[in-house]
Length: 264
Image: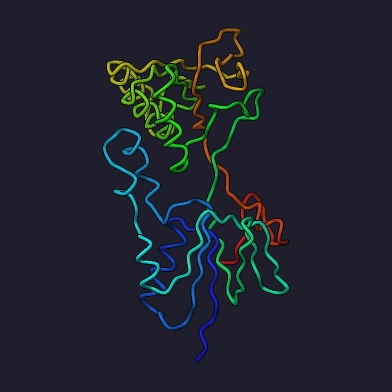
């Protein structure tokens, strides 16, 4: 029996978990092709914070090596962002010129960091915190710059702040609410956490709203607040949530409503 062609768009944890389960329960059904827009194989995104904190390396968090893909006869394209789906002819096209035909198409494009729509958000040194590149950018910035500002006092923001402090930067966390981790902690616990982190050298500005970012020669140098104050910032990490990454699906005419709408 001829195998069907399965194309997976997205080489992250969700998509590869599906592939792993398919290989267990029905290894003879599909010829599998995977497209990922990062240069790495599948890795544990949850463990990026320990990498930033010098507790682990990139190699430590790799979940599936290139040898694993080869051993399972999976065709892998890395650094290959799919930018077009031809649903009529069942072909996907990548920005690097590669393409693949499919009988079944799995979209596992995940999410992307939400970047505040403020002036200066496009300056060099302003990043989200979502992937290995973001982590490496933070580590590199710490080698040449001093002042890091984290916008967002949730779990991800605090993990970024901790890692950058370990990297040697002067770190300030900006949070619009009255206490940290307000979705997980009550006020008393949030204030206790803040005190503990301040003892490690982190700084906090709570109930503060960002107005704009300014820079010199294209790189961020300061963050300005709606109350008229400002502080220096050589690196700004926006940790203010994520948004589903459904632009590709929407461009292909797939019904989307704040994400891909499914029927299960």
